[in-house]
Image 1 (cartoon, helix red, strand yellow):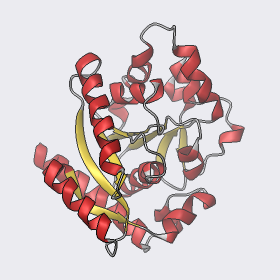
Image 2 (tube, rainbow, N blue to C red):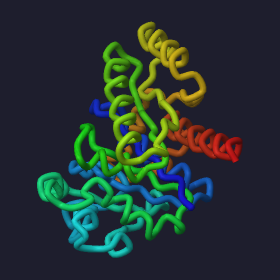
Image 3 (spheres, rainbow, N blue to C red):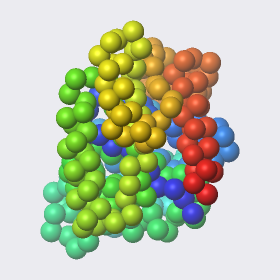
Length: 257
């Protein structure tokens, strides 16, 4: 049965989609069966996986509104070697259309129940907002991965997110827990980054991944080529960091078992 991980942070520009795409590719490279779900109307995870969002006839929007089944809509990322449930701008309309629908928060969970046995990991790239799409992601997930930059406002945003997770746990998904905090775009020469990193470790202890994702030009370039950094430049610092993260995650899950 798949481990379902929501990758979320309501603050934009923290490397959330970069982490979703590159972690999916790194887990797939380690022999894991992976499904990546793009739950962001911007469709960046879709494009970064090498699928053209403009040419899609059906997307996650159709799955959420129960107009199509997940197997009908999923695509395969050739460059990443994982399956993808794609998104495009149409998804922005789902928010409005779902408002008066029954079980609107559990639509994604219901759709995933039909395919969970086909995968080892299902990663959900949530939008940078605490909206109905994100709630669907959190309700469907077993756990949450929080990518964050080590900067001044990061801890404040984190407390909002932790409160949202508590609310979802109380009303919709009692099993939901924080899987881990991932430090992204990290520059060890930056004193503030180092201080925030230390604070995170004090507050969250073992929940902070040992792996740190550095600032890396190859990571920034890969999406424009429609592929994860692993197939763009597998020896870059960014690619090696996400490979390390995938290995750390697998090691952690072995220890839990």
